[in-house]
Length: 275
Ligand SMILES: Cc1cc2nc3c(=O)[nH]c(=O)nc-3n(C[C@H](O)[C@H](O)[C@H](O)COP(=O)(O)OP(=O)(O)OC[C@H]3O[C@@H](n4cnc5c(N)ncnc54)[C@H](O)[C@@H]3O)c2cc1C
Image (tube, rainbow, N blue to C red; front, side, top):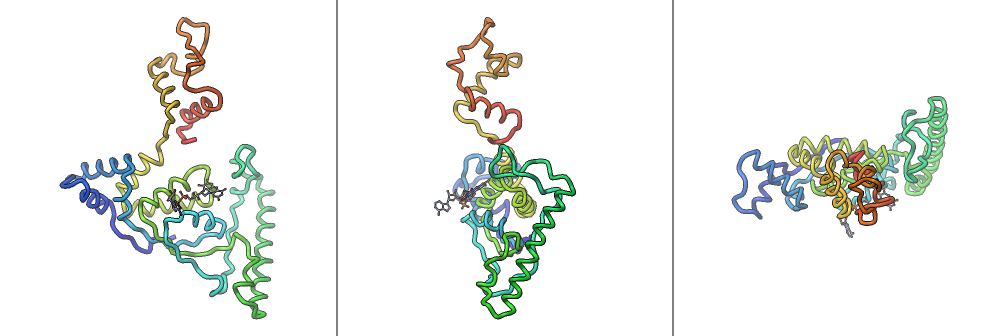
């Protein structure tokens, strides 16, 4: 992946915001504060003034997830026009894992044992070789490229130019850096963020602080949080505060959270992740 070119940066975001806020800010600190303010208040249009264009080579299965982000402008290599290259993604042995038990969309954390993983890699590689060999044979017979390609696998690499403004790039990153996203697209998203950091470092820092690293609370979660803070450190955890034989016993029926909602809240506090 490479950055083809870009328009604007931190300064452009600040200048654009000044148009709406009047004379506005002066120093770096004030500019940084303004960027934070804009992000915190979802004042998104100044970030749309910054535009980045990437050239990306990616497997088709990643491209299918990526293309769902409709607010970008894309130009992709044409398999109708060009003969596709013999270039496929093969996962590393350490990335091959069984289906997760608790996440229907994902794989388990632990990889397969090395020998088993190599067997899986062999199966995948053989399928790729066979499909590509047959594709080239059909092309060699003069079959139209748009038809010869239709059995090629999702692991085939494609390429595109991807142009997006900074606001929508942040939205892409928020969704695709999340642990629920597939590992392969997460790695691309990490690269996109690293590149964007060179273009708009202060905006990216603010995004990482206020969006990526942030956890939001529902009304009831926030009520529970306040209740625990008021209870003080010794009785902060719900198990203590909920015991029914102490002098300070609380009426469980009036607690803001229970059941799955309470479990999710506890997990949020423990992991610091948006769940
Ligand atoms: C972990 C994960 C799992 C997913 N699983 C699935 C799945 O199983 N099946 C599936 O189909 N998709 C799945 N998706 C894709 C997901 O539903 C979104 O399509 C994708 O993340 C793009 O998000 P978006 O629409 O917010 O982004 P963008 O397309 O960039 O849009 C940004 C925002 O602009 C607005 N917008 C843009 N275009 C329109 C429009 N035409 N009409 C109305 N509003 C518009 C919307 O408010 C939108 O939120 C998954 C995504 C993630 C991250």
